[in-house]
Image (cartoon, rainbow, N blue to C red; front, side, top):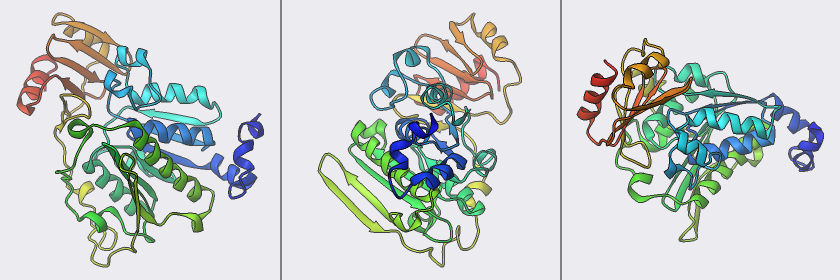
Length: 340
């Protein structure tokens, strides 16, 4: 059955039986299970990559269904955690692949724990603060990583190999704030560019994992699928003055930045991440919050509807406050209903 499953991929000469065996022994981590992440995960799992860790902090909402291909209407109606729902669907696609779901926000606290036991890291995120963390971990531990971004009708992708290519800091400088970029909140996004960027990311990963290093793109690919524009520019060698890959300064890891993450893509939502964990079982929190509004919960999260505001609370104490735009209001609601 295994040979039948991968027969068409094995018939592709650059992969063949040996390459398929290498894929089965490989380990990958995907950070972000939104638009890019769902395509990345689907293609890697169906290709037979032996271990895939899917990491996401968010829940599924109706606005996701237009482009996040693993989810359905029931997932959105239930507000399921993306990582958990994705893992369930992926296991149905290929039971031979070990899939680990992680419902966490990738920060300096957990990045090395989550990303250093794999052969390759894939970027399915939507913000540069996390991408700088991925770059720091990749450079520090000599792990290749695939960068991908898609917004509106345009996208960008590159495959970074520490020691061989420039890193993210070489390209954009050491500013980990990453502000001033368009987001799907401000300019939207269409599904075709997502699929194209993610497919290019997976193609590079498959080349790398099967040992086809000479076939690697070696450049930064940029496209606008609406304007029919496609460009590639070479990805340079590491810059001698780079504070990250040459001077080994890992600022995103070492600055230890915590706090609120604002503008979860697609709606008015602010994430509150307290310094300490929850300390109370979700079932007990559900009973406490039921006096204020309708509560639904499972082992991964609970959702409390307060009318104009909704709270999604995760087992690690992190919460998404939906329906607000100001950080102070989000903190106040968290303190009032959950406690700091």
